[in-house]
Image (cartoon, rainbow, N blue to C red; front, side, top):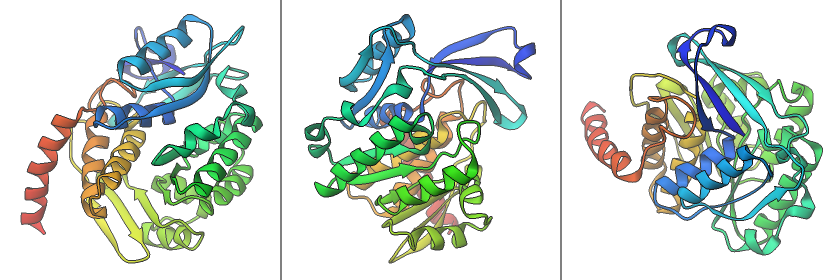
Length: 308
């Protein structure tokens, strides 16, 4: 989707100006991976309108492979507005019903494209926007699993898109299929009904994934696998807008896993990238590049080690 982010705190009706950007959780993930120095491709549909064209231009500028992005003739590209609230919180208003993105279907998937990947990533929002998108996500996961491709998943629960009963069933079914699951604590509360990250991680691990990362916002995250579990401290910044921070966190965590880092370092690096993404307006523009992320990671890891 194309994003319009208010540039002042308050309700949308009172916002005098908006900053145009780009959004979509899996797109944000792809941008983060690209800016952190890895190759990434994207599969989706956009409309043959100016908004679709500007998304294609952005992905290409970021170095993202768009050979499997379908431009839908006569389709339109969804948009959303961000209202900034106190403390970096936000509210979203979407105009995406029947958008080109929601028309993505299992028939649009090229199995060979997925087979060559090291990681396939998808989200609960992808599954929520339409039945065909949900079916496509399951097909893609099945292809990835059959071919030894690591599968990561962010439930990213949005109750404006689907009811909690349906969301819980689909999300639980997906978690049983994936290798890495990356929910926020808010997601875990909605899906599992528990507010303790360790309990949530235990329950999620029992469903089958190898790694569970519970994102805790400014507090950092809790990481659990079958061999280890620990909290990882957050990195403090001056928060302007948290839009896309969780998506950038996901991308950074997967990048570090691909590079062979241990889970603690992967999570600490992801905390830093997620925090830096909250220091500007919108989902995409503030996502840091690798040199900055590495510099802060090295400095912060020394500081955290001294404090521990």
